[in-house]
Amino acid sequence: MSDVSAVKAALKSQVIETPSWGYGNSGTRFKVFAQPGVPRDPFEKLADAAQVHAYTGVAPKVSLHIPWDKVEDYPALTRHAEDLGLRIGAINSNVFQDDDFKLGSVTHPDPKVRRKATDHLLECVDIMEATGSPDLKLWFSDGTNYPGQDDISGRQDRLAEALAEVYERLGDDQRMLLEYKLFEPAFYTTDVPDWGTAYAHCLKLGPKAQVVVDTGHHAPGTNIEFIVAFLLREGKLGAFDFNSRFYADDDLMAGAADPFQLFRIMHEVVKNGGLEAETNVNFMLDQCHNIEAKIPAVIRSVTNVQEATAKALLIDSEALAAAQHSGDVLASNGVLMDAFNTDVRPLLAEVREELGLARDPFAAYLASGNQERIATDRVGGEQAGWGA
Image (tube, rainbow, N blue to C red; front, side):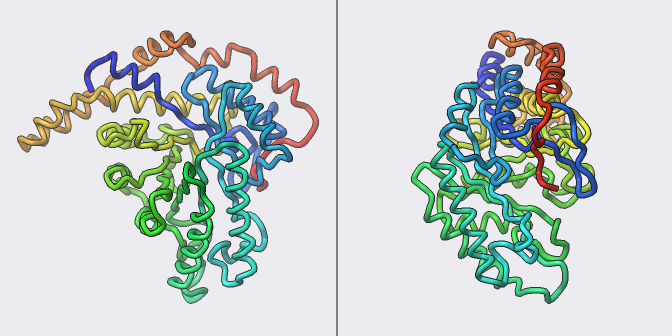
């Protein structure tokens, strides 16, 4: 796409969903560092998400995590989001923190534990209906640590049974997004370890089941953009969890570790229609900000995704296709590198200005005084966190 007006239009219509847990205290298995001004409940999390949207203009959706974001009155939470110019995005389940789930949740050998886990997933569907959320996002920590610990194929049977029950509970306008992860916390086998396993289960379930690609959930050197292209081609890419990793599932700010990888992924998204509304790919952040301030870190992630998207939109697709068809390897690569090496910050500054926003959302937020205000106002109560 070389038409600058078309590029600007695509950037203005981009939607990036932010995670409620990204505004709370989070960290590693070793330590969660508390920070001043962290939200104390889901309502304050939404207030922080509204700040990100106010300065970027492209983050109107917020993922909730249950039970971290459990409230007595979900319609009230939904109205609060709407009053802030937001809407509720995906509902994320949690079947990995209870002691009962030590040996698994929906794949646990004990049917009573499996029932507990599946009931929680069904509860999340109820919350979808109460909040107007269209997406149920599922990630399972289920797996084994030692050879012989459990029946590998039997665990797949249990997983399929639970997924089928939840799938049947979904409404016509709801869908299930199945996430995968190579390893951790299980170290020998993981029950949904890769895109192929997730794809196979979604294919069997039906059209309301799609795959989530988390950019931190692969073996080192995995060609993530190939997975993206394949799933888009098959109509099975439901969502992204954007983050960065150096070693494993580091959950760092998107684009921080390997901006070229993020660009390559967004190239396949653009080329294969992933930005089109009818494709319905949900672009989400899944990050845990351990040492950096929460709102500025989410803003930085959003702008990093915007920059990668802008560069992908600037690729001269006609020149690329011509070089590819002629077998000119260097010319083909050169077209991509020209776009990647373009400084798109002035273009994005123009887009924001045309939307009535500050040209630099990160600097504008820091100058707003909001970070100091919430540190002063949010004293007392219990800060939100992921329970580690």
